[in-house]
Image 1 (cartoon, rainbow, N blue to C red):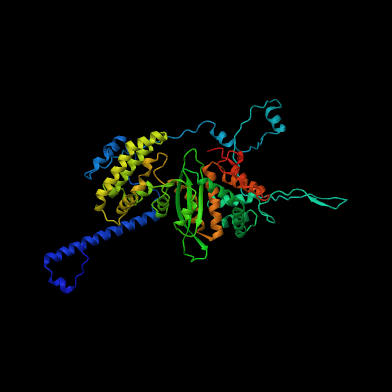
Image 2: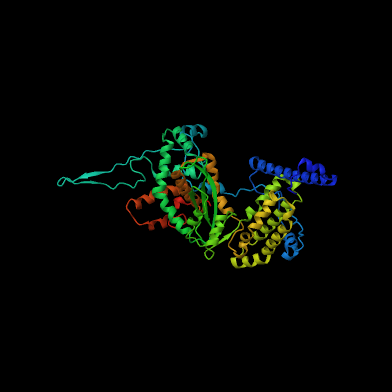
Length: 534
């Protein structure tokens, strides 16, 4: 619409047809703005009150015949006309799951067992059977007991000896401690770390729970233990894992805001918790590392990944892509198809299932679904064959998708959710296509977002972090907890084991080579820290 402004005198001089034209243009512009505001309102309502799932309004799976007809070759889209893929709606038949025989006994076999016998007295038996009876095999059943927080004071007595002749005083060896002149033990600190960084509960609730069990330990004391314990001991393992990250072939990256109230800035300033997760290749160590920083500046990922050489998977945030541009011979940046579909999901949710049918947003989701469906069908192939199949079948789908969105992008408002989705895909085209040439790459960055989930749940419970030291300690504790889970370890037992072992070496000034045996994927870890059921 023309941006020329008319005064009243000028409008009076315009012919009737011109006035009608201007009015219709103004009306169309107002309708477009109203539709845009209505969509934004629906998206906000959906975000606040609706499901957080990003499933589209389209359900079911696509058949290979449908995909072939839709995206057989990129040339089929030269005229800009692509038939929307048809989706089969598959409704699975409901069947009651049959519990395998012996499953309960197998599940309970990993726990210690205490036997309780329930018998009748000899007097009762004589009364019932007139003194003549025999005992048959017992009826046996099992129950699982649970013991809430229990405490035990361990009083250490260090023997002291004195020579009668030279009066020399000798003391027996004192066990390694994580903090001298403190009641904290590895088991107690591990319990606190597990409560907050695995179960996502604030420490003040744990302090109240302890108090209800007659153990009075203040929140401030627990926080001090967490900070000192992670700085002194757990940070050593964190740094060793950081070194190992540099040798990984694939790294997923993401970041999430948090508030730190006492970091020398305005209390409303945002800080960020960055997360870096190794790829899921079988021959690579599985690890998740968090890195607290005050800002979202590009220097932070650049510094953290300075030793990394491989493929970096991220959303469309520019600093990640800058790393690849500055080190093109060492790092390749790949895009995220999950982010590519996010605006289309918002658009279809805002419209609802009925109104979303036949829209460009629904069509875009169908096209992306076809890409996912075909690529997922290649997951069991070896890398060489998967690369071949991606080039043969998936690449034409991807090329056709970009040809299509470029042909229809002008049919929607740029600021609408659908328009934003088209703009995102076109701007990220180079990065979204990287997976086609790398068979080991997934299509999205969901691994990083899943790794971030526990942190995001936790920060909703405690809302803010008080100090920078606390945020840095949280980054270390979260890193160890999430890496332990990824390697099928019991986080509490693993925390406890680390806090028992690391002080033995650190207090003696040993070299840090011993840390390799403590890494979450080490084969030298004791069985007690490993999960029996994976």
